[in-house]
Image 1 (tube, one colour):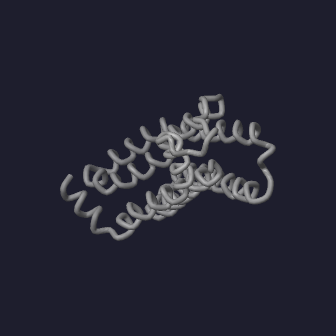
Image 2 (image 1 turned 90 degrees about the vertical axis):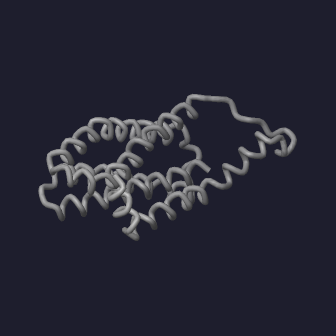
Length: 182
């Protein structure tokens, strides 16, 4: 494990991702975080209230769990691939198959909650929101397609290219989803 972590830390891309990805999400969500902090601390404007749980919030919570599995699982599995390969290619394939058993249902939940949110918020779909939503839908489609291609790839190059495209498009989808939630 120590060897794996040392090798992981020596890869500049890994270190860059560990800094940039959380930083981007915190930056994108900082307005919402600040608003919620004001509500909870009592410094919000008079009349501001904490929202009650609704079906939309429930769908958002379920989507957040599914995104954690789809995106976070990909990142975790990608980090483990090097260590798993040292144990044998069968171990890596088995881990990937097991991940797919939870990843694809999570992706389906993300698509379903996305459809729910589009239908429920049709009145908001104009201007910049519409453009952002369209780009997000493309990123979601690319994420699903490249994950499907990755699962069927038989060469190291195919696995690497489709795996990277899947991760990048999944991160883009998540980032755009955060932007839409604000």
